[in-house]
Image 1 (cartoon, one colour):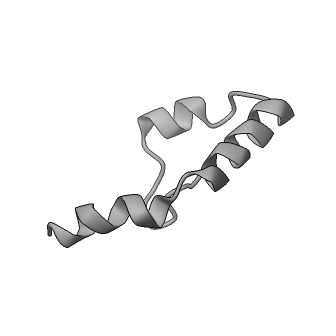
Image 2 (cartoon, helix red, strand yellow):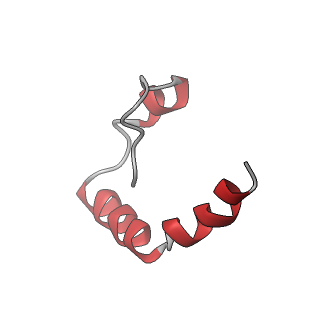
Length: 48
């Protein structure tokens, strides 16, 4: 899963940072790879 690198972790990120094990981490990595993040961001960024 993508993490923000330009800001400190927020409340939810701090609470959920340690949840899940290796299987959950692997699943989330597969899901993250399957999502076309750049295509999803493009229309949002264009509206600025």
